[in-house]
Amino acid sequence: MKVKKIDKLSSQKRLVFLLGFMFLSIVFAPFLAPFDPTQVEMGNRLQSISSEHLLGTDHLGRDIFSRILSGTQTTVGTSLIVLCVSLFIGIPIGLLSGYVGGVIDRFIMRIVDAFLAFPDYIVAIVLSGLLGPGMLNLMFAIVTVKWVGYTRLVRSTVISEKQKEYISVAKINGMGPYKIMMKHMVPHVIGNVMVLATLDIGKIILLIASLSYIGLGAQPPSPEWGAMLNEGRAYFYNAPQLMVIPGLSIMLVVLFFNWLGDFLRDHYDVKKQKGGM
Image 1 (cartoon, rainbow, N blue to C red):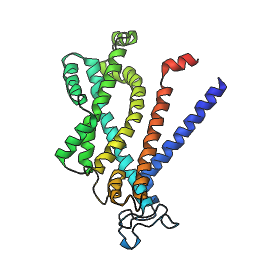
Image 2 (image 1 turned 60 degrees about the vertical axis):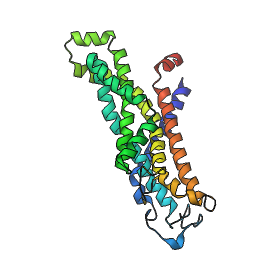
Image 3 (image 1 turned 30 degrees about the vertical axis):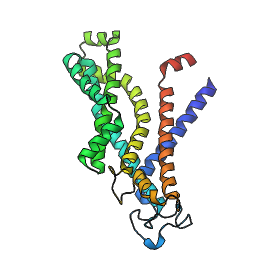
Image 4 (image 1 turned 90 degrees about the horizontal axis):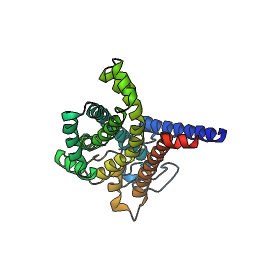
């Protein structure tokens, strides 16, 4: 039992460390970059890795390391904003739909079903194409397709919980719907939402990078990882690092958030915890 607790504590420490490192990278990336990520210096174009340029330079002489750091704020930071907005929309609607039920629930779920009938990528591409290129339009398109998943998850959890006896006791004691949802429903919802959110952030990062890659997201000279992949495509044989480095950055960050999602899923798996006890 003590060994399990020690392993769990060490895992939590690693998790906190990695989250802190990710947060600091996002917030302080512009200050950590040794060069201006948008400064063009044609005399330094396509340089290899050196002590001055840790990851070399791109086809316009811009420092790749500085652009990767700044791209953390653009790609990962934007993904976290999209996720927070999706949660801010999806959780309250899911609480309302699941607890009130009736006509309101049927109306909301028809909207949710309409969005879920098509893949996220297809809807996001169509909306981004209609709205035009740009990060704000891209963020709006992704939020439009992402909030429905959280609404459906929260609704199903609320419907399951509101049938239990402690909710009936709360109603008998005069507790109002708002207090019931905040005190009894939200604690049951938050664990499932956190697991889905950490697994979903990787998908959002891939979505932002892929849409920027095809020109619907960040526009030059913005240092976004997907846009950097597109810019380095023509120089892949002569300077493969222009695509390899941003591609590895995307892969490692997505793997990190997937690992985080698996960790939280095990942490909030009540049945597994009871079985271990």
